[in-house]
Length: 255
Image (tube, rainbow, N blue to C red; front, side, top):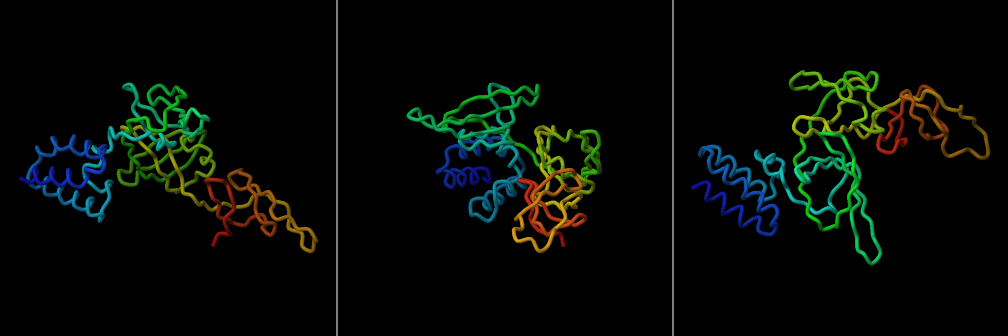
């Protein structure tokens, strides 16, 4: 009875999105084999999703739902994981391009997860692409040594070693006790991210000279992680500042 009720609610509420409806119904066969208690819990979750009091990620079966979801190529972005011709790829770069009268297209650079090989492909903006589920987990950075970041799972207290290149240019900001995020596919790390704002110390910078008629708006400063950024002229060596790790820009003095 609950399974039938669940099916009717899904059909009514998701009829405006054919892709999502198909995905929900593919999971229904599995769900109908669950116990009455499990179906009650699932029905409650769907109610939250349908009424807007929850989101799809909160559903207990969001993992099943997210695997094999069809999206249009125009929605691809770096970090996404897709399946193509039986192989799994990570999207390294995705650019929207206009080809004059030829219409718009997506230039996408992919990295094969198993072999690591990269390839560049073109998709029409409305081409269907199969996007697969990627899990995000939080870790604590213990230390960084010789191009390797040593992380700790705060829940299982298990140590994980990953190459710093997973974090891209932001790897320069990795430091002890920093909370980081890993994107995983089948428990394999694909990429990593760090907090958007990080506190750093100015290691080297020209001294501030008062009284000059033409004071520069910014000056170069070498931080304690050997990253050089532009800072206001009044800042001195030894001061702690907050840096935007996305574009290496000065935000403010640290509290």
